[in-house]
Length: 304
Image (cartoon, rainbow, N blue to C red; front, side, top):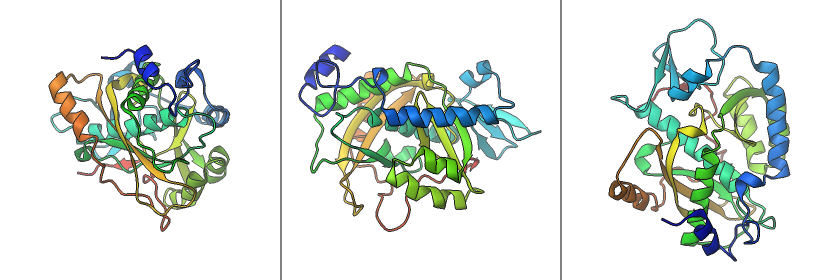
């Protein structure tokens, strides 16, 4: 397996940037926009913090189940008296846990993509569809000013390594429900997110649920895993240009596969998952007609 040093050498002269190799190490350099969004999140979080589950409990469980019907993020204050069950990766029916993990993968992928490219490439995160483990990959759709980019093997390896390194920082994945005005302020530099906010708020009590890991802030219905230390093996398998009519530039679908740290799989079996993740994910493709976002109601009802 290539080391980080070997992988970044292979990427020399391509789209990413890092010291001395025109490739930027995400963990050592974040955009001013990420810092601004992060500060707004922290300020609002200080206003809202009341009661939370203990850290030791949050690090062992994936997601909570309230009153046998409602999934609840582990860093979210409880709504009051309720029956609480903590779900883990080894359940006999892990559907809800798998979706929570897959959604978290997309969220973290967005964090890595946001800071992976050279400064002259002005990307814009669009959205990611609701998690569907059966598709074989988690995804994030991103607008890039590149006419027909086909990533090299080395570029995919660098993205994979950067996502692993991000997760190894053991960032808590935190969430807040914020009002529409604050959401507009947080995402004012992202034309796609600002278009999504009114529709999300209209179906969520005029609130927008935002999540944060490190300095990365994004919109999602949640819930997610409580900490990036839940992630084990990660591969960014492909980036595919989508056929869409969204103005402003091409939309690319970044696709990956990952395993929780608590799950082990032999190399051959994992390689099959990697191959499958290279095929275009059939999740809904964003278009100019209608508003695309992952349903933002924070309290996600369990579905089959």
